[in-house]
Image (cartoon, each protein chain N blue to C red):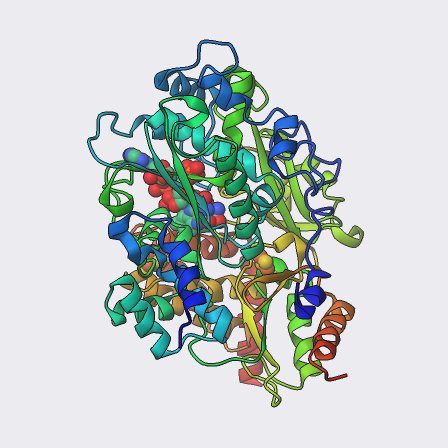
Amino acid sequence: MSKASQVLSQFQATGVQTCFHDRHIDPQIYAGLNGGNWSLKDYEARGGYAALRKILGKDGGEGLTQDQVIATVKESGLRGRGGAGFPTGLKWSFMPRQFPGQKHLVCNSDEGEPGTCKDRDILMYNPHIVIEGMIIAAYAMGISLGYNYIHGEIFQVYERFEAALEEARAAGYLGDKILGSTFSFQLHAHHGFGAYICGEETALLESLEGKKGQPRFKPPFPASFGLYGKPTTINNTETFAAVPWIIRNGGQAYLECGKPNNGGTKIFSVSGDVERPGNYEIPLGTPFSRLLELAGGVRKGRELKAVIPGGSSSPVLPASIMMECTMDYDSIAKAGSMLGSGAVIVMDDSRDMVESLLRLSYFYQHESCGQCTPCREGTGWLWRVVNRIQHGQGRPEDIELLDSVAFNIMGRTICALGDAAAMPVRAMIKHFRHEFEAKIQAASEAAAA
Amino acid sequence: MITEATKARFAREVAKYPPEQRQSAVMACLSIVQQEQGWVSQESEAVIAEYLGMPEIAVHEVTTFYNMYNQQPVGKYKLAVCTNLPCQLRGGNEALHHLEAKLGIKMGETTADGMFTLQQCECLGACADAPAMLVNDRSMCSFMANDKLDQLVDGLRMVEGQP
Ligand SMILES: NC(=O)C1=CN([C@@H]2O[C@H](COP(=O)(O)OP(=O)(O)OC[C@H]3O[C@@H](n4cnc5c(N)ncnc54)[C@H](O)[C@@H]3O)[C@@H](O)[C@H]2O)C=CC1
Ligand SMILES: Cc1cc2nc3c(=O)[nH]c(=O)nc-3n(C[C@H](O)[C@H](O)[C@H](O)COP(=O)(O)O)c2cc1C
Ligand code: SF4
Ligand code: FES
């Protein structure tokens, strides 16, 4: 290690604060991790690769057919952990079975949604659980080539994942004729280099093909036209990480540890104004108040003001509504927001909502890929208007203007980034209109004086 | 100049993709060049284009699309501080301002001795570790309160023989 790397390594996260604490509830993915036990032999000691052995009939049992694996995942109620919550088993069943050419499997580890850092801790401290989940998925869909696309900023995680891939290949879990079966699967890691939009699945595919990451029109969905134009299934890191447990314990058991239509555990990245920011793996359906408690409550004993419950793209909810919610797809949707990527951004009563929205608006105009006019122009416009309200130059008509610009972006763009930029604006106005009005009022009084 | 050793690193990346899809390795090749040379020059783009069998302009489109490629030379250490909302709530801006004061430069600038470039950046995917900072694209630094920032800058100056 060079001397400079030695200096820098002192500041590397240890995972103690975010992952190795005893404040998860019934964890599956983060269970038993300590930072030193990420390697293959440790993973096997925790029961790792037993699910793969089971489906291949290498544990003395009969093995599972492709249809049985997909049926088990369907039964589990597992929904995509990347944000949209699409049923995973259903997505897998869309893949053409008898396709003559190459099909692909892709893991979306481009975690870049502000507030989200759960996939990082999975890949860093338990990489084999993702590899095993991907191998099982590949088996179920008859896929022989896959990639894990990893956020460029977490390069050390990419290196860790590559090291884990080497171990899995050496042990015969990856490559030709896995564990002596007829099934082969090659898996590689690919890193991004700083573009939020590449988390959108079709932008990710373009990027993986060595191009600018600009989203494609959907449909066709990747299941019919994906990587290199061939059928492709993309799932989030945490989605794949859930699969080995489901195969080992059965779909029903997974469903039961969450709530109906919201099976399993989910990892929430809690950031902002709490005493103990970090990742918390808890069953879906756990009350928000319990999650807040696990995270040590609101910082410095202040009052809770608002929560962005599912990453910066999800609409903000005021404390009173949030405290009534349980943490699952349906409850948060009913409250008017989205569970999204599970990034819970907590804001206390000292926070200025206009200032917070300003930072998010800056982000979206910066990350718009520019190919749709409503998104390219609209995100810049939103940012400029919020900027002038924040800096004492707001005009009385600006609130309606923000709302209408946001409204006109929604549903008129190629990908969901446009909506992601617009929805938070409308929610901020809906719940915290008085803060916008107060700034505009102060501006006009200053101008009149 | 791209050495044989660099080409060996390229080859390792190219091997991950089907033979007719060499272009898929472009991001990795560009980041290897950036690690070795500090930035991506037009000359490097040309070499990579030839190596991967793609048009130079297609390589350039990639360099300019992704935020982390340095299109000009930067200081020996590029410090990118996250100021997105979750970090902002926990001292991201303070970290940026502290470094501005300590290094005597504004964000976006490079110190006169060419040692440090300071940037603000978008979410690094380390939000629960705020304030978070990325050094030279590959080293994530977590919980960067002011005392830690001082230690980091002083430590790097020491390594470079600038006590
Ligand atoms: N994890 C993160 O860092 C981030 C997550 N997000 C989340 O991403 C979400 C939006 O993602 P999208 O991919 O645009 O959502 P989407 O609803 O278009 O798709 C969800 C998944 O289901 C598949 N799918 C949906 N309908 C299908 C059909 N009829 N046939 C075949 N496949 C189908 C899609 O291919 C995709 O994999 C947002 O809800 C947001 O929460 C957004 C930004 C960052
Ligand atoms: C702008 C944008 C960014 C996204 N970023 C991510 C991401 O970083 N990680 C992710 O898994 N999904 C992300 N998604 C969602 C993906 O498009 C896709 O729905 C997901 O990867 C599917 O996997 P899942 O079904 O397992 O959730 C993003 C979507 C949009 C619109
Ligand atoms: S909505 Fe925005 S980010 Fe998405 S494709 Fe259109 S311009 Fe690009
Ligand atoms: S907001 Fe700073 S790392 Fe995510």
